[in-house]
Length: 389
Image (cartoon, rainbow, N blue to C red):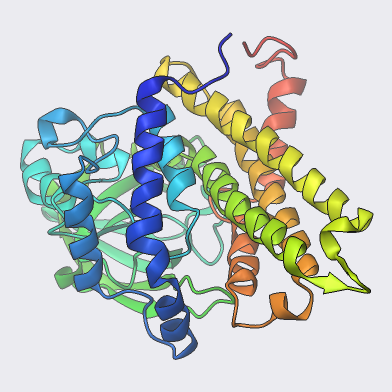
């Protein structure tokens, strides 16, 4: 085994880090100020300009197939890029990306939804979660009733990322109640906003603002079914499970930046005649954080590498998500403690990261769901201990 990045991976990592440090980190004070005033951290125009700069560097559609203008760099590179972008809290992505399940669309759907999304001309959202169906995905209650060559949707979706900005949604609704309990009976619809659904902003403890989507007799043409009729449940699970490990990657990047902040602060903060870096209590917090970051990094890389090899990585994606999310929460807590009262203020971004990190343990499957998946795989013999390599 060679547990090092190759030369290409190192070069891309270095280029992305330079972009983050040069283009994104200088925006942090302004982003913090805007967010304190209740405004978006960066404007759509700023984001487009930054994405244009990144595109000139070749960072467009990291894992989008080349036939759609993407770089198609693979999952390991996706992990590396996610870690580097997470070193800042400035809300940014490189663009040129579309949800994996959109590729299941027919040629007409690809032309209308997939390609404009990749090009940045359309914004999508994934509408699966409901007030009574979060971790228990089989409890979807939204109904779709057939009426001629249309389906009529009624119900509510909640905690939908991009739900306030999206101009179309991938909406999952029950089309056959009898099949629903067996993993069928759910269909995915491509639903344009102008078909009549509405979104409402959900205020959270973080800066992330998800949405509730309201559907009242929203009529959707039959040709807007994504994939197969009654086959949407598996599409939904594929979307949820595909990049679960990315949460761990983001936690690694953020934790690494936070730990460096703690190291720098500990060297210059003096109490009782000595820098606090000389205090064993501080040293142990720094050491524990560094060890946990490295452990999380390699769990993420392992899950990404397995995908690149065409292997089923779901068990290890759950491990990377569970450990990475909790690691990130422990590290940001230690970093805030090391900074003392200053860490608790809004003058520094630590308290912002503290609030954001708490979400990592919830979305894309809670800690409890990851533990359920991991233990079930072991107890049923789907995965054997020591056979992951």
